[in-house]
Length: 327
Image 1 (tube, rainbow, N blue to C red):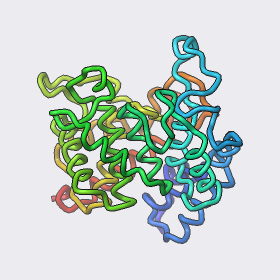
Image 2: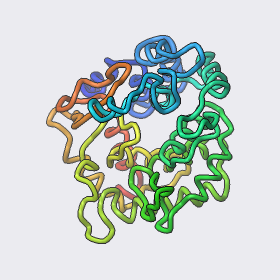
Image 3: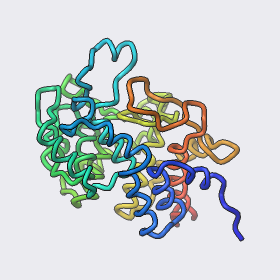
């Protein structure tokens, strides 16, 4: 008999938010089994705990992007807070909360009725002006069944000449950002998964992907040097931040949707991912973002991380199983 994989066993000895994804992506469990595990996100563990933090009006912490109690000194002294609606919804999407469950449907309706962006009071599901925020809003809205096509159309027209996006565009930036581009790409992919996308959104996703691929996911185009050393360190939760594992997981998800083979320009990032595997087969969490959170979902920097390990293992499985890679 085949011996159980201790890493898989370790991953399964966890929260439903991780277990159902391990069952789907790593153990090939029948859909009925992993779907049954996924339903527990609503009632058990991190998903239930985060839902319990929700305000009566459907928001989290009383605000869209910032908590109602936010004071700018907090950002300077403790870091950006992560408890408001935008980041809480994205975390529920990462957990895999069933979009058709009652709490999800209720949240979508109440947020649409009550939440306004701090930037200029725009209704939540209409988005605001910043590409990173709008990319995540598209991802969450498409996942939870909201019509976000107007934001998608706007984002598609906000590409810079190099094919990607930068949330500082409105302040004069003319060069795309790795982080802004990936935030938008994840939104466009979720929109395409939900609706099939539009010719313009699919074209935008293609140019955004080309921006990252031309840079091997982390290098400056001009010098070949790493654009930011932190891109090679593994972070969770990413929030709006970029690292190569988040990018690789995006490219995996896109290929799973379209049936495309992996692009060989991912190979250097894949090699780095392999090099970071610990002797026991797990991957470490390198760092976390400072700032207010509802609760922690990882053991802390320097320790093996179930979230990082799950994502790394499914990326490598996808990469290694494609015929064009094996050849």
